[in-house]
Length: 148
Length: 148
DNA sequence: CCCGATTCCTTCGGGTGTGAAAGAGTTTCG
DNA sequence: CGAAACTCTTTCACACCCGAAGGAATCGGG
Image (cartoon, rainbow over all chains, first blue to last red; front, side, top):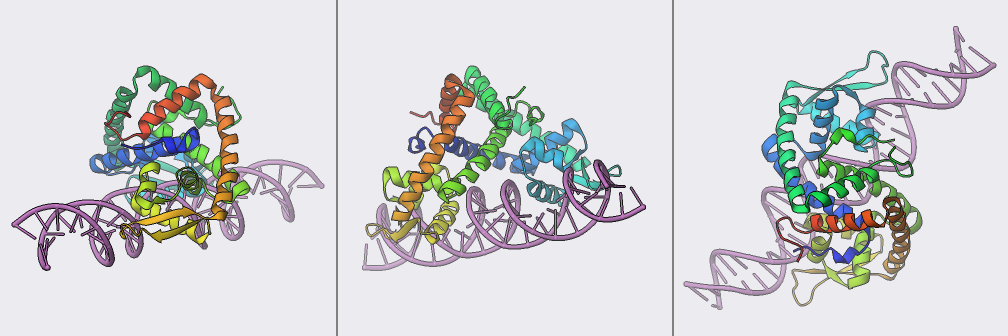
């Protein structure tokens, strides 16, 4: 059994610990059943739902800095999950798109995380899950600005 | 304004995004005002409250694997924040203790995170903060096992 | 038109995490 | 007692994140 009391009311540290535990679990399942990491899955979902995106847009949605996106997309490109090409309209930008391999991986990953999410909902209960979802959404939005 | 809708009801991805934003913010403040990282601050708090601890115990509380603890403590030792010595009673173990420098850094870091936590509470509201705290505590406990 | 400011991405150096395997110490049991 | 099993930490190779700095393309004012 894990002891969390040590960090007491430090909400921020608690979030980190919870995120670490969940990440490790989700990462293992994703690797086993979809062959991708959790970070890669997040990019796959974004591209699956919204289509081709620029590096900066990916970083904005996932709260990642530019260097993180560059590295993540590079590894995914090397794994054949996505393609990267220059934006013809603005040649500074790079457009990232799902490959066919990537689309299949995205669907497998979606099934894995859907199941994982259901487990979490059951562990927490509907009401707590909803509150948690709302609170995290607010925290995941830019600090200072209300969500709007 | 950040867009979070893309990851929709994937609670796990949402937690990662929220944790990343908060970490970045907290990390900057901690570096500026206490000269330590968020991970290091977590270790400092643990040692401040509970005293000397073994590597494994640190990992258990913070949900870190053994290699992560080794690296973290090594950097902290090099920075003069903690001391590491063999456990005389069981010479496999290593005991980590706060140095005087570490104790001062821990107190400064505590002030920083206390203020940060107050901001979060205000942003969320008391009720939501309590629910969030409870839910995260359950998630931060080992999966499967109830918190007890 | 052109030079400076801006935007977008990448590179670089370094902290932080993982799983797998190795090394050292303790315990267990035949 | 001694070999096997177990526990604790470290090392290794790698993924992933950051801030700072650099390079290429675009934009904007003179």
